[in-house]
Image 1: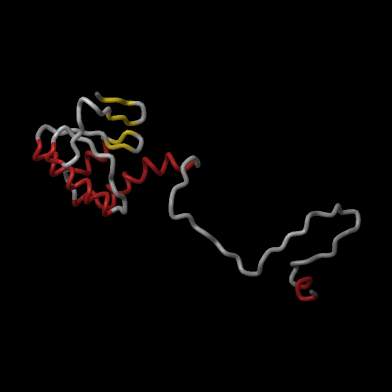
Image 2: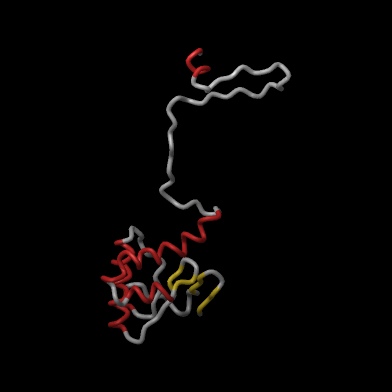
Length: 136
């Protein structure tokens, strides 16, 4: 105890001081870092929009068709885009999948009006929604 007093870690407490709840601080501090974004936190919205932009910065040069689409066609955390023909759609889908895989993200919730992309929806039975927007 004397050593702690000499180093300035402890000092004698005056009697008029009100007692506080004692607590223990361990000698070894452990730091934890989350590997995921907790939704509902202040930073979650920022990270949802910033992460695709960082993926473009880091990996976008290898994907000339996908990078500009990711830059301009995100609506919050949904990519909503279209192209003029099936061949371009297939290539765009391929590049988007590879681009986001390179950034450690897996794309899901695909919808298309062509079976060639493998994710065709039934126009009569399904509505496509993204944050309040709805297509019939």
